Amino acid sequence: MVRIVSPNSQPIDPCWESMSASSSPSSSLSWSAPTPTPMTTSTSMTETVNGSHLFNISGYSLLKGIGIGKCVASNTFTAGGYSWEIYFYPNGKNEQDNATYVSLFIVLASEGTDVRALFELKLLDQSEKTRHKVYSQFSRPPDSGPCTIRKRGIMWGCSHFFKRTDLETSDYLKDDCLKVYCRVGVVRSYTEGPEIYSIAVPPSNVGQNLGHLFETGKGTDVNFEVDGETFAAYSEGHSSGPSQRDNEGGSRSRGRRSSWRDNGGGFGSRGNRLSHRRTSTLSCRRTQGPSTPSNEDENNQLGQFLAEQRKLLFGVFLFFLFLFFVFCLFVFCILVSDVGV
Image (cartoon, rainbow, N blue to C red; front, top):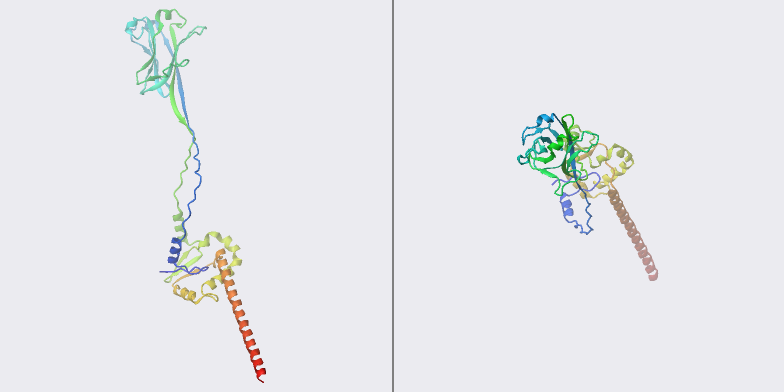
């Protein structure tokens, strides 16, 4: 077992340190009121993402007789992240209607499942009256909610949108042209909550920095000599920096005297001097002088000084008591001799 003697303290036995740590009393358990858990909030938002398209149908008269179930389609347009098309059936969509009505539908033209949306189809009045033919879910949504389009090719609209004979004599047809306006509102739901930011913590490079300091030897203030080989190191108070050490210059002489006393000086015991000689193979030499003793060391030194003063005063008291006893004995002998005469 090797004991390391620091300049400002008595030799420390590692076994005694472990016994002291193990014999320390356990901390008492104290009950405290539970900390209230902070309340968090979030909000579910549901809204429609709208898109619209205007479909011009020119040459209506040429579409007569196209056949029941046949249609003309608009270009694809986007609404709510999906593609849509408008289908217009001049002779109707269903065979049983016998071409009495024109049919108008909106069709999902892209891949999608269970797309919930609101739709509006509007045949525009091309006169100044603006009495449009409207078939819409926006103004009055159905009781069952928005329409659900299950897959691609499913359509929403009206087979009996307008009677064909009435359409051909109305203001909706002008210059052999029809104008169809379509609006789609895809339903989207999302949740809003407090924004959470995360900061990536870089890996620690303390070990690399310490290794660099030991390699360069910059700022070292302690040298260890082991078997003739010298190792540079840092003392415990090295972190105080040069400015603090410079400000503590006045205390260095006192620390040097305390260190000399603790390691076998005039006030130390003989056992300490012998212990210091036994550990001379592992010597510690300071290159910048010893650090300032802590308050605990100063208190210990003051206690030792007071104890020594008390011992000195007690010795002086015993010395004078002895002189008084000798004086009394001398006087007693003189008195006895006088009585004998």
